[in-house]
Image (cartoon, rainbow, N blue to C red; front, side, top):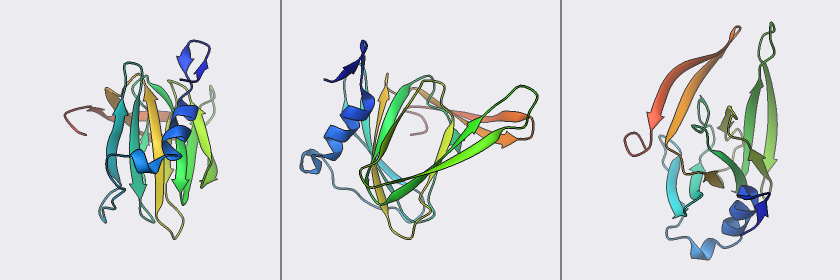
Length: 157
């Protein structure tokens, strides 16, 4: 296992899984209503998920319940929007397009949304450590982030 300090390198793990699709226990599937996901692997300090995205599918603004992680775009293109909050100022949203082979690490307080804004389906591998227990969904407004809902693992996904 590749490590940064004493924590696993989530991006390296995502890259290893993306490099070996023949080891995935399931083939990617597509759901016309919402993105499809399947947990590929679980270890004591992380878990690995496979997600598919048809054009126009995406997430709401969310965090990962205190877990850090990374994602790797296996195929297609995804856009990640992130939000920066500054005292006394409206939130600032930044967008980044990530194509096949690109990836990104994120910390335990990361809030983002991901969308397939391209005309082609996309597949991505996501790693979270520790394993997800909750995800908070947000609305971004002029005053900052407003909590909409807290989803719990095992109950809502």
